[in-house]
Length: 169
Image (cartoon, rainbow, N blue to C red):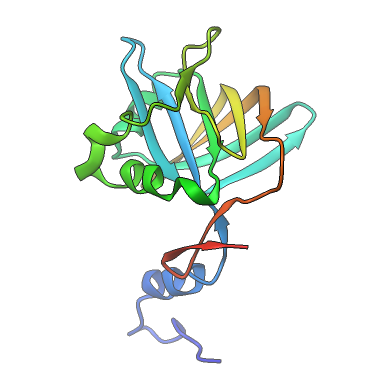
């Protein structure tokens, strides 16, 4: 095992990135719409449960993203847990160059209560109201109180990100 970051000449941030590439994470799309009604979505991999009482989760979002800007309005959001076959929409939502393609998929649906878009065919969808926001340097941590959950029937086939590429379990 190579120890990185112990001397002052090493870049601990780069070492952290190398280490995090070894941590598999589920791929999700955070979707929402701004107060004016325009939908917004981005690929996220930093999502985790907080508690089941009350049912809640957190997601970390770079505060320079357009979706992060929308979330700071306090709007409801959805976390769409992607299926293995949803790699393309994940790529669209991860790249600023593909922003105009994010909602070209006809599987986007809208929740009547919040209006937040969700992606039909996802492994699971968590519909959240914002409960708390914590700013930490370049990122904001949004805690969502889960209002509703949709779970896809059938076998689990979630999209995983590991070592810089999509994987399947």
